[in-house]
Structure formats: structure tokens, C-alpha cells
Length: 215
Image (cartoon, rainbow, N blue to C red; front, side):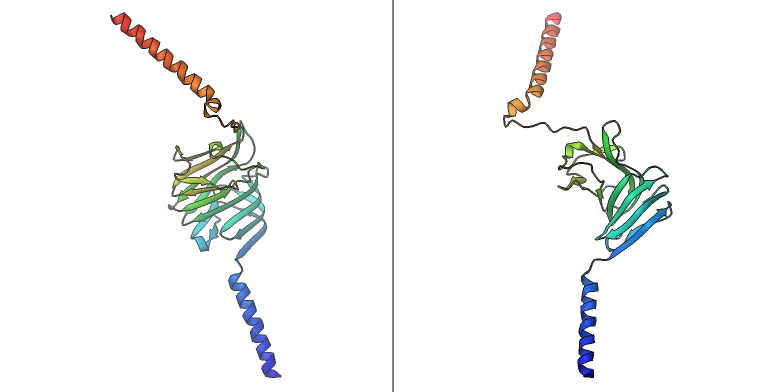
């Protein structure tokens, strides 16, 4: 009887250990606030997140290497929204985060990165569709960075930044409209072709007049 009980207990312990080993670590905080000295670490990715201003949130959860800040509020302003951010082999400091539509600009975040690692941002994009890279602008130290060269846009509207250090800004322009395609390359680009043709004619006429005057 004792042996059977010991066997059952050992089996139960083994099951608990296996569950703990294969369950992703989840760290959660509810109803908290932070200051610039507070750091949200991501041990498994050797990264960290901090903010340059005071702020608060209804909950902050670290799961699968990503911090999720629900009902985030920065510098005692109104609630901005939900921010999901990850940093791998880098430490970032967030300066500003916005989700409201101001002058055609939608979601935007500005941060400073230390370490040539990878950062992932889910800016709570207010869109039911997959956005296009042309809607986004990523700058590094004041210079625009081309999509595919330093950053990429995932199908779920998550932006992944790789290898950029220093000041980085990510902005989505909410007034961008993707024109429908007719399947005819000349029809789809008729305006551009017409404009280029007019400019070419103007240049040719100008050169002709210039040579006539010289002659």
C-alpha cells in the first residue's frame, strides 16, 4: 500500500514538473504605474523596455518574450491604448506613443535603442485589414529606412525592426489609400505616364529654344 502511494505521488510530481517545464513563463502586473527608473526586463531574450516619462497601465503582462501594456497612459495624459513590445539583444527607452489620428498620422512610437538587436511592435493598429508598407515610415537618426532593409511589416500589422540603434521612429499614415488595380499596367499608371510625358516635352522644347537662340 505504501509503495503504491509513493508511486502515485512520484507520478503526480513528475506531471507537475513537466507542466512547469513546458508552460511559457507569464509575469503579470495589474493596476500599476511606472517612472523612468523602472525597467521591464525580458530575460529569455536578453532585452528590456523602459519609458522616458511617468505612466500607468491597467495591466502589464510578459508572455513569450513580449510585454503587453493594456490601457497605457504616458505622462498623465488620456489612455493611449494597448502596446505590445519585445526587445531581443537590445534595450529600448520609449519616449512617445500615440494611437490617435492627428493630421493624417495614425499610430506612432519613438524610442531609443541600445544594442543591434531586434524589436517587435504591435501598435494596436485601428484597421481591420492588412496594412501596406507604403503606409508606414520608419526613421533612424532622422533618416528614412526602406522596408526590407532594417525593418519589415508582418501580415498581422506588427512591425519588426532589426539592427537599428539610436533614435527610431515608427509611424503609420492613416489617410493612405491603396488604389484598385485594373490589371492594365498602362491604365493603372496613366497619370504618372502622362505627367512624365508632359515633363519630357517641356524639356525638349526648352532645349530646342536654347539651341535656336545660340544659333
